[in-house]
Each structure stands twice: as structure tokens, then as C-alpha cells.
Length: 85
Image (tube, rainbow, N blue to C red; front, side, top):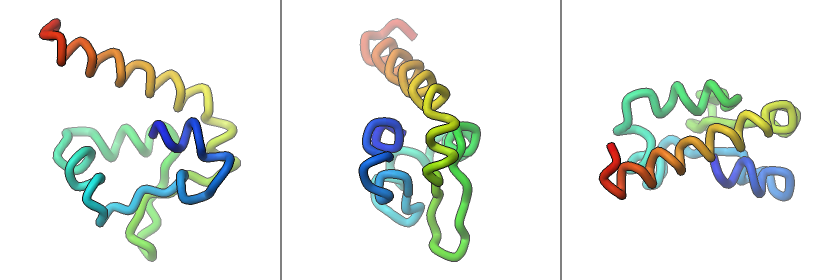
């Protein structure tokens, strides 16, 4: 999500998440609601390529939502790491 928000306008590869990739399998797949969250911010599943995609027009329209969601995720993770949860 961070790459889609910060680098997605520079290179289309930052708007794609390969669902067969190691990072996805470690960081998203095991989380309850992980894929649903990505879809909520504009990613769509492309079954032909086996990945989630965020098209540039969708990225531009959802950029504020991407940034807000990213900030909340980072704040929640920081609280978790610091034992506040």
C-alpha cells in the first residue's frame, strides 16, 4: 500500500501486488481482512495475472484514502510494537 501511495504515479509496478509473491504471503495473506482492506482502498483482483491491481485513475481518485489508511496502519502497528494494544 505504501508503494502504491508514494511511488504509484512513477511506475506501474508499484500499483500491482503479486498474490503469489513472498511478501504478500507473509504480510497480507495470513491477516484476517488483509485482502479486503486492499480492495477497500481500490485494488482489484486480476485473476488472469494472479495479482491485485490498482489502476492509475483509481489510484489518483483514492490517493487520500490510501494515505489515510496507510497512516492508520502505521500508527496501529507502532502501538502494537510499543505494547499499547
